[in-house]
Length: 104
Image (cartoon, rainbow, N blue to C red; front, side, top):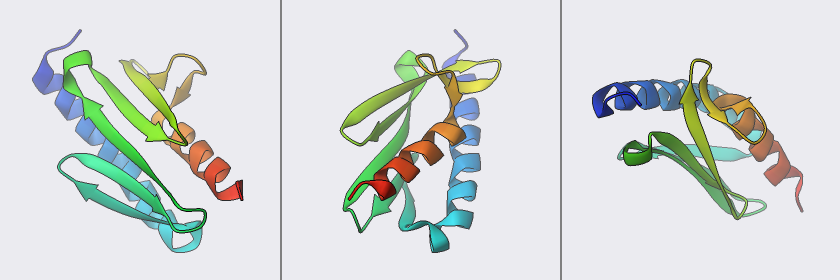
């Protein structure tokens, strides 16, 4: 484990990068992006829903609450990774958004 300050730098950078990618896609993406107190929200009108992406410093993970499921990504040399699938933060969130938007 790394110290909390280093974790926060890594998590903030990863979430900021994802935020910028999502801002660039939101006009055509069918969702809105909001940030508040270090958390990133992806909000859908149709079908209605909200994803919450937030760092969890005590366990050094980024947590995603999406589609009635919690995803916990660990910091690795490849960035934040979901151990179950090997997906990194951005591809995972994009997949979840596509799945949500295709659900009707």
